[in-house]
Image 1 (cartoon, each protein chain N blue to C red):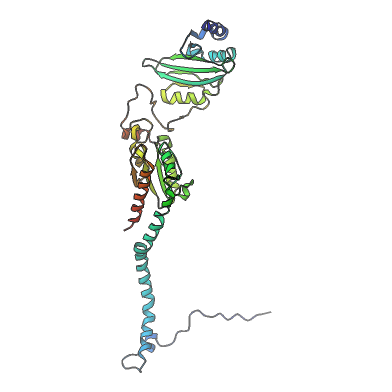
Image 2 (cartoon, rainbow over the protein chains, first blue to last red):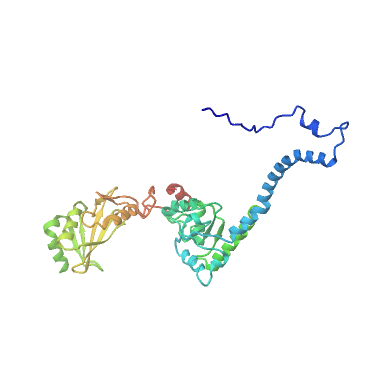
Length: 206
Length: 158
């Protein structure tokens, strides 16, 4: 039983004998062709090139001027700090999310997993024993991410700067964006630091 | 006298290793013993005197020697007893108390890493409070406070 070979439609149309331009676009001495038809033919060549150039230009422009402010606006109004308490600053950290200071009105909600966070608030004394855990938590957070060093201990070691077991400043471990002074800083100071970080994010990429 | 009774009770099993039984503030007494016979003293105190709970182990760096002290608690007589031994030499060491009181485990790890007293036959001698590659015994009197940057370079484990 022999079936006839299926007819394969050739994707390439058969070439005409004469080149396209010579037949379609009329030359000076050729036959008269309407002007609209000439412009249409020229546009068919121009449009793919223009589309390519325009899209690359738009991509750059949109990232810089359009998308970046949108992402910055969204990011700075939904900062999720890591719920990680180290020392007495963590008490003030907790108070900032209570009813009186209510950091959630700025969109700041502490999360318990570093995968869901974009803000690491180092609130307390960092010892060398816990240093590599802090770095692990920081590396587990998705980009973009920011770090606030809350209190004197995280900023520069505080009263334990010369101790044998204390990291003299958490910026020796991770890049810090905002330093908050105080021992411990009040919740207002933490909120001020968060608002300054939001200002930092607003200017990001400009 | 309580101290005499204690010395009498300790004599059969650890008499040769007891240096003195003396009154001490806050404790029933303090038993000073030779570090060579530490395990005998621990067993005698635990079995014969009935001190069934080791409350703490610590070490002190006197400049010319180091002292290891134990505070044990009897749940029967509700009393504390102190044990102490003087360790001399460059590498002070004493037998671990973990066969008698298992709660000595972490206390001896802490005493080792902070004061540098070695505990022989300890089941799990690792750093407790310091990073694993910490190179100092920081509560020794010979330990000088470092500049933060210098200490960072030497003790950084990350």
